[in-house]
Length: 223
Image (tube, rainbow, N blue to C red):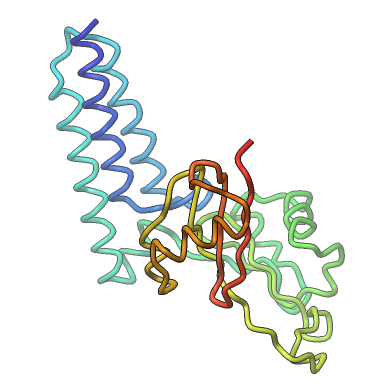
């Protein structure tokens, strides 16, 4: 049991490190090569985890090899547009000036129902309003409407733009984020005084405390 426990921890940490090196992306945003590597890494880690008779290196070496290949292919894609096209593909224009590119849809084996569904998910029910619809390499559809159908901006409506103040978490589930306090040019004395002002004696009594650049403080008590 102890050996299994230790082996599992080692493989878990190696898998996490490998995925962290690959970068932060959601599953739907992975390129074909990244998706393949992610699937293979999970399978390779499971083999020595389930069988104690299998040497740990049987799982570790292939994982590190796949990670190295992913780094190499990513570097090649950055340096060569041809290599990038081969590895990651290229985007496809599905709608141009309100007209559906039927040949491209056939090539991609994309049905009309699937296209209309993606358009509805983007907030459009009529193709006539759409100037461009581009299927990106990660499988997502980018929709660009005609100018007259675009939502008006604050500038278009001549509304004075208010400053968007980004709130930073000062306390999260009772834990103090000192780095954010220092970013806001505050200190421990300020924190203690602010908590007392809002009726809290200790940080552990606070579930969430945030403050933005305009010094607006929001505090939610821990239940």
